[in-house]
Image (cartoon, rainbow, N blue to C red):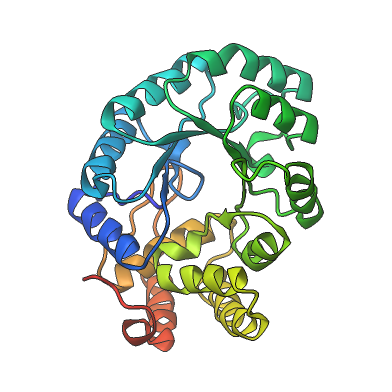
Length: 296
């Protein structure tokens, strides 16, 4: 989930409420906050804690809430983890500390030291483009031994994703979750468990329907729905020239739909008016009010 912000970079409480109801009415199975799309590392601890508290209150136990707690220090990670526990979150999501490059061995040691102090169940997060470390299968196995309940893989490496599914197929309680939304059908049909899809912020029903079609092994419906996801990638995700365009595009789409504003945490900035207009045009072409109904 993105983090709705106001112009002064404070949390947009009204936008958050509208977004969460939009997601829940779209049928999503859970909420992951303070991840990459949620700009977690760019937000102050104050805003992070406000977001956790408000999200848990609005969701009110209807679906699981997972909280990204990745930080450059163990102390920062634990501060957010403990707040998540007190606010009523269901699980934590842990990626490698993201400034100093570390080895697989150091990541294993880090987990050994930190996991016993975590206050909630945790899931691993493989995000090598942002953390400089592509988690090895051995590190994932160690994390599982330490109690990890699954892994979200955002490496974009489909063969690695297949390796994960193959390695842990004997334990259906260890969840293999794709972070690359286009991999959702392959993940499900090969034996994985789901995806954390950024596009579900604005079109949640599209991705829930894609999940359901893959679970039924309905290849014809999967193709039809994936074509719509590819259309999202060719339009909304292609406005702007930097990699940050995905986050900005999602936020701009939500603004075009009247759900929340499109302000980002620094160092990112919202799209300019011409780019916002492009996004609005793309959203209107999708005819989302008929295809993917919003609660608001």
